[in-house]
Length: 383
Image 1 (tube, helix red, strand yellow):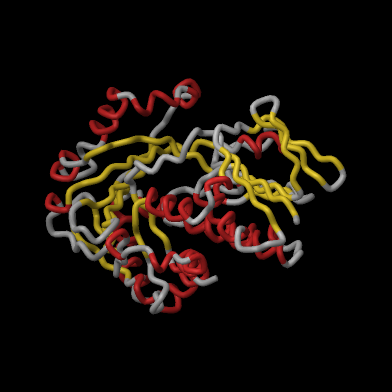
Image 2 (spheres, rainbow, N blue to C red):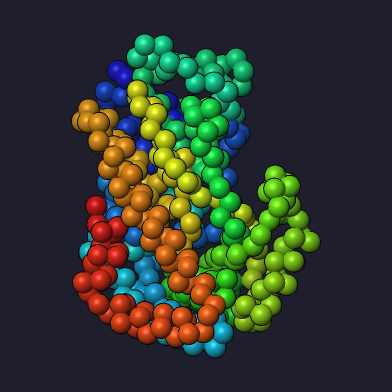
């Protein structure tokens, strides 16, 4: 029996562990640095059909319908005039059992965690050293705990310590000159928005998205991306982003970028600096990276969670079938999504009125062009 060690109990680590636990040829253990998995966080995520198809392999389709939502379209708006430009029918990519889905991130994590036996996750294990000895990998946690495994899967997020250890800190994420603003808003405070759809508002150096995360018709998710310059000292002070003064300063910057009705009714606001990957690391020799540890995208194509799941599935198939194509195939997909994410952020945050005019005309045409949509979205949404 081959031993698999997974560093990080996020979406990608939990998902790939669920795949391996059904295979008797492998023994899987997750090592998580925190003392527990936080299931209180209520912010939303979007899952396109490429990830829903994979999640259904482990029973996601049995998740209660009240805990998830299937939006029909994306409605595009201009922030300045709060005017709808056009809509994109994302449900056209759905099948009977695989539908574009929004839900609380914590609900997905809880689903993945509950399918694993308790002894699979080892909490309070902070990775300190990764060594190779012939075909075995030796891990050191908390300075003295030694673990030997045959395969190592690193899935501990964008600031991956495991990745830093095997790369000697050569590949680090870069600040994207943006901050993400997360929150939620009562649906009763949303006026003139179609509650069945995702609403995307585009403006000068800022865009935001509002969408339902379940079927209770009470709360919708809010995520905004604001261009924001930060000094090196500010980036090092991660506690800064939790300070009331900093959050209020961000709200002040949004006064002219978002309607007062939405801004005044946002709850549970949190700010996060956006970090993205600039390169790829191929560790080889039975060591692999998945999820944000492999590559972190700008958050403008809503593929972060889906790619965490997809990369886990690809790695699982590669290991059990003893193939060596995981890295090359993953890089092709990552480049495609990264380019679309950067293009989206540029298009969503244009400020020049002439370019905005032509952008809006282009959106009206392209969102109805099946050939374009099949290329731009279909290549991502279909495994």
